[in-house]
Length: 179
Image 1 (cartoon, rainbow, N blue to C red):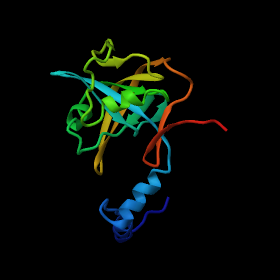
Image 2: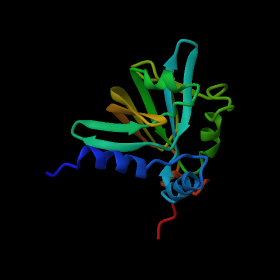
Image 3: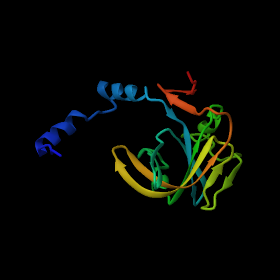
Image 4: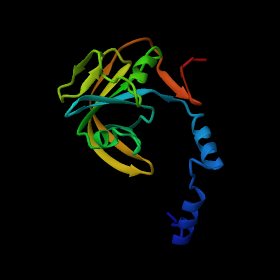
């Protein structure tokens, strides 16, 4: 395995720095938007009650051990709560559940008048989602303007509406349409 000299690493880091307010930063954001992602709601328990937020930064990491990850933004007022939570659940939304994702955006009503259950770990669980992953935090790593939170999957619940997930691509919500 070859290693780059320290000066080359410094130049490489400079070459891939994007600032959101620049033309290159907007191009990066636009290019990333071409990758369709699923839409999830991540939930945890807080001292003031159940909390949730909509996220599309969800991915599997490992089957053995069973690990998944997601990335809360540092700018989110709920970042510290979620990045520091011992337990949390990721809810994969079905194509007809856009209204649930909107409940957990910045000014949405969250859990107000939303039926939910409580997991054995005390985490609020939204009923009827396409899938749910109940997790215990395995690791959390700073990563630019986000934190990468990795969770060990304690249990999976599969069910809910339809066969197709709600997806987000090119700044818009939609559904998977098989060829």
